[in-house]
Amino acid sequence: MSSDSTTRNGSRASKRVGIGARPPTNPHAEAWIRQGDADALNKRDLYTARLTLDVTPALRARIKIAAFGQGVTVAELLRALLEREFPETRTENTL
Image 1 (cartoon, rainbow, N blue to C red):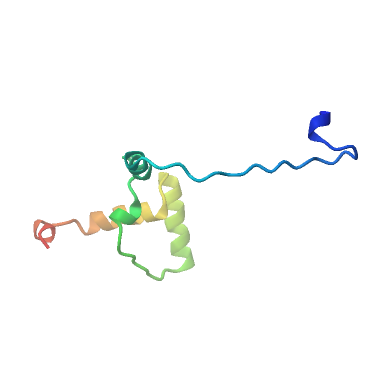
Image 2 (cartoon, helix red, strand yellow):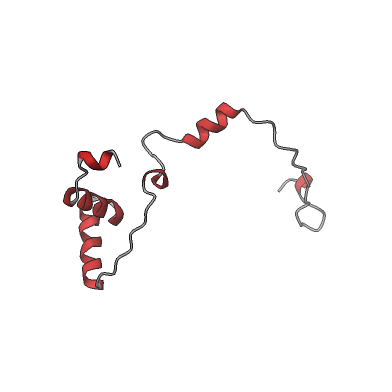
């Protein structure tokens, strides 16, 4: 180690650096950062209702294996299954 970063007894000298105030932000830049990638929409914006159901451990394992085999999450697999089973009808769009 160089002599300017250590003391005589070999311990490191600590150097305190103050952190200044956060610079003013550009609202457009902040909005752009928060929006993120257009392909990665916030799931909480799309899915606002939570559904809980009880399944056997064996069924849960089969669902997890199926999801892994398809390269999707369990939630994605079940959403797709529910969408296929319960397609949206024209009358539901107006509700």
